[in-house]
Length: 159
Image (cartoon, rainbow, N blue to C red):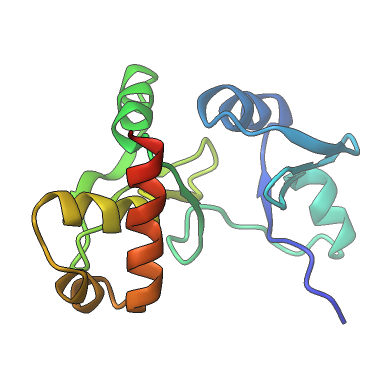
């Protein structure tokens, strides 16, 4: 058996696609009408159609028990865009205990979306704060080789 992707239901495909494509800049991989899969391998499915597939059982949104997780090096710019579009936040940008910057918010169907800074960028940012490789590894729980490789990658990019 092979795991393929998470699928969330949406009440209005046009509204959901506008959110994911134009607000979160996701690109469609497959469009099946009632179901759309995005690059990154997550899918949205029209709730009314999905309900028929599960013998008209109840479909609930907004349970705060599931989230789609994305990463970006440009998290501050994304949060600005979300605010400009009046997106409802679970919480705005903040640091997790391991210092990663994240924001959580709702899509139009009250599914939680999280965007976090990449862990590679986090390592680089902490190094710019003069933390040692060992300190960064301890804070982030990332292997020291990952920390070193991440920092080198960003140092090369920023030369």
